[in-house]
Image (cartoon, rainbow, N blue to C red; front, side, top):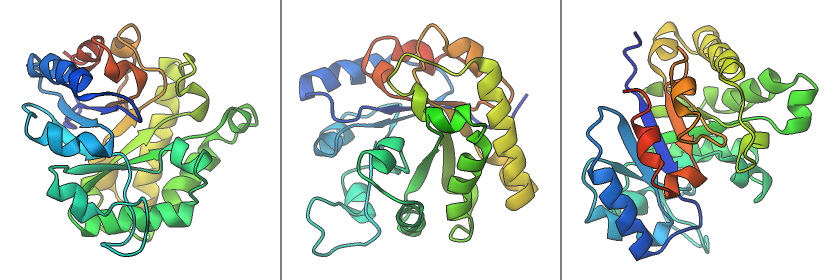
Length: 245
């Protein structure tokens, strides 16, 4: 059995109201599993949820690479920490492909967030045309490689493999497909970082994870949890949190 603690993140994206989030908090409060649970609400609700959190931690959905300044619309790691967040999601495919963030910028943001004391959920993944051209490993290794020289301590990083073609589409990599790339990612960590990083870094799967498919995915040796989008806003999120039980 792996010694890596199972981890489930809920990325609520640009969704929710205080009332809806209260329902989700009540749902999570009933969870008694050993799973580490981290939820990422819209920024405006972080402080509200900080006063309500019980058995889960809070994450920002993004942050910038500076502590302060004339960066309209951005927030800093220090601001996230000030309203109760311990984590931040960086490199998400929507930041890469909707908002045009490049590897260099993402790497700078990861390095700065770690320096400022946040833990990072670092997202990687390929688009459908890249998978169809057998470029999955090249793309994912390249995205990991972009942060390699800027990161000294991998103990505060969780890697989330999210095939772009499976996010919000209802399509999911089969457990075998997910395990194959997770195993390759772990080997990359061994070959490029260290044996310790390979052994201890948690690699999550994300991409249309549901209460129906989570247990089969969670049973794979190199899948250490999930980063969940749409399903994290529904009652089935409790099933996903408990999928390793």
